[in-house]
Picture 1 (cartoon, rainbow, N blue to C red):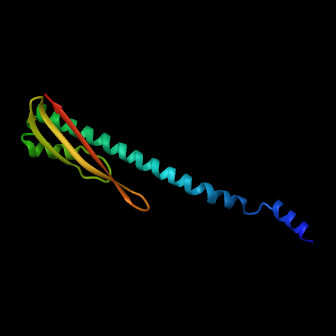
Picture 2 (cartoon, helix red, strand yellow):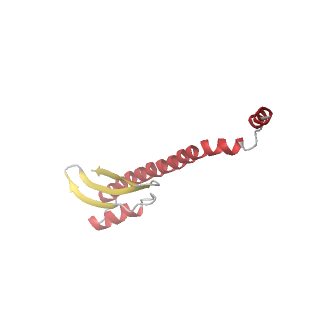
Picture 3 (tube, rainbow, N blue to C red):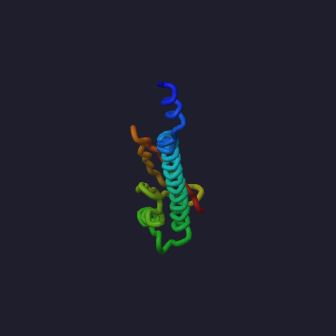
Length: 126
């Protein structure tokens, strides 16, 4: 008597899609969110590199806009479009010309912990 009921139970496929989603769903969502954070990190790095290049170029070429180190730092800050971070820029005169450096920390919020990724960029324009 137990035998026919167990055969029916193994042929029943109700709820199999929910079980498959319970197995695959968290992995898929984790990979998707990880890709989004990776793209944001790469965008922050590219934007910071662009900002220090523009700051060094402004200090060398646009002497009416970037008259001193403070205005060069403000110009670099104004062309930075990265997400989540507020980098600090420094401007100095070096042997290679006008050097602008930027540094920031990008925080990855994981469920259990927060991982901080330091970002730095330097550019020198004669």
